[in-house]
Length: 160
Image 1 (cartoon, one colour):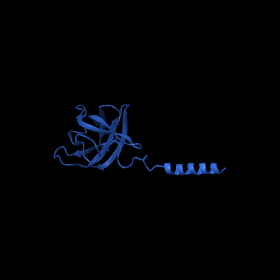
Image 2: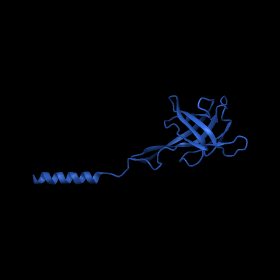
Image 3: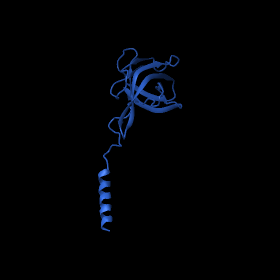
Image 4: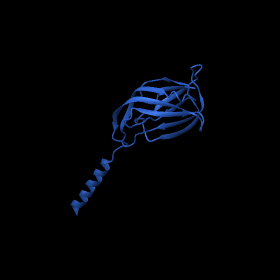
């Protein structure tokens, strides 16, 4: 009985000491970064506040509506995380209005972060193409930073 109590005490201490920290929570921005899109006035080239913007993204299984936002100067949009070399993004300024299709081409690189976060993808060699058949409401596009490591810098400018 004496050895049994000692065994239980050792197991209990081992259980307490084996509890790890918050390794399994990935909350400090270590996940896969999203693309930042900003807006410019097509006539002046200056930053523009868009009254409303609706975004849809094709992640490989059809369009997914990301919803609308009002009175914004930029928008953060997640890209595909599979091995596809591109993501198609659709922009509208009204809920049921005409939309412009922009294809974002890139190469990806996987980086190990931690046991909790796993692997994150970074995007390099960004190249954006506005579909010439859908130039309403987006008139043209301008490139920004051509890689995505975090969400601080603008990667694409839409001209309205």
